Image 1: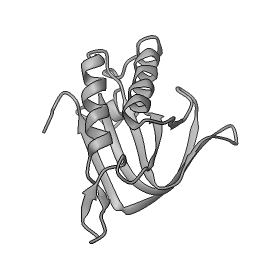
Image 2 (image 1 turned 90 degrees about the vertical axis):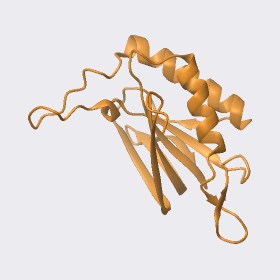
Image 3 (image 1 turned 180 degrees about the vertical axis):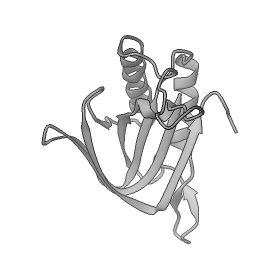
Length: 150
């Protein structure tokens, strides 16, 4: 499972012109799912994202987590995170899970994040053509791959 984490002042997602998710200060998370992903990946990533200390403390040092600032989360599914650009100029998405496997994993990620955050998150619509708007704070952007725990 791959995740791109963006610290945002605000973010929203629209599907067919309607806002399906919207947050203020918090995290915008793009998640890409592959067939090899498991509940273990979900739990590890959720814990890592919830506790990642990328928000400023009183001294302006990135030392607080989204939990500590009572921030919000907007989660967006994004199969293109598993793009392979090894051959040619057209990316291959062969590693990205098909909807029959990805949707249940996405729903499990939502449930895990809500449990760990202690409140409901905002989401996009799986598989939809989404328009994401954000104000990146910092900017702070971090990518994590649960198969490569660096």
